[in-house]
Amino acid sequence: MFKTKLSEDTRYAIIFVCIAFLLPLVFFALNQYFKQNETTPRSPRDTQTTVVVSETDKADIIAKATAKPAADAVREAVSQGDYSTAHMQLSKAPKNSPEYEELRKQLAAMPQARKLPGIRKEADTRQSPLRYLDESTPRDRFSDGLFLYLVEVSGTVWPKFCIQSVGKRPLDITGFRIKADARTFTLPATAVKQEKSPGKVGEYFDTPVDQRTYDIMRALIKARTATLTCIGKSSERVRTITEQEKKGLDRMMNAYATLGGSFAFVQH
Image (tube, rainbow, N blue to C red; front, top):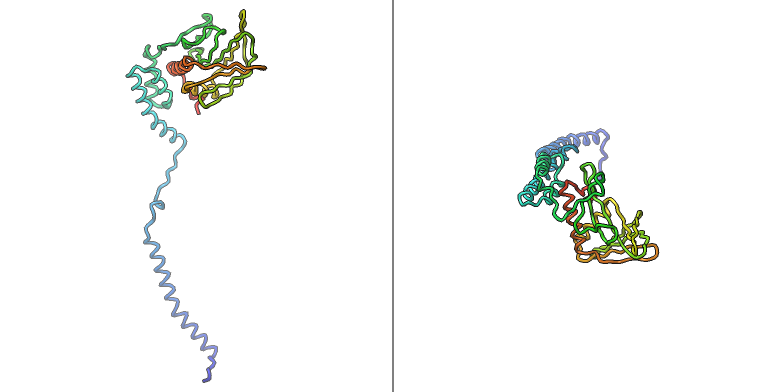
């Protein structure tokens, strides 16, 4: 059987018929596809609205969220006569909240809120700044001691940390090593002063509270056992930090809060 060769015109005619037949099918398929996409429901993520919050609005939201719990804690402490805790909780409240100002004035109007049990006040002269010290704090430089005390200047109270060490001869202290349970702190001593008395020398390191000394005091208050090593140029002196000293640190921290102070400037 012989195949008949199609003419060029016939081939073009067949191609045209095929295209004419296929085009409607293609358009129909595309039409169905786009209709299906239009009716497909959007996911909740697609329909969510994005809200932009400014830094100011964010601060207001945080202030409102934290003001109420802090204010409630202050009122509860006042009702129980625990003014140290009241001041401490007040320091956690946002300063721009209405509750903070109201409670601050309320505490300031209570004379009993400024009473400091176990705390003594002293000043070298009438012109000298007033100092607040725990009753267990040494009254001179010739007794060992590790303590926190407060200095009031123009109505503002500042916390200071002090370590004293006494011996027959000066150590020429360059630093301290403090152990509180499993934790060990190293404290450089850049400015140690001396006072001499017949048969003994008192050396003391007196400094404003900073992050390092704050962490040391917090660790000592919680510690079961604690030691202090005074590191000299040629020798060391080691002693146990007493329970009385640890309780004194705790009382003075509470006293600082009672007087309106806050350790927020050194807290992590």
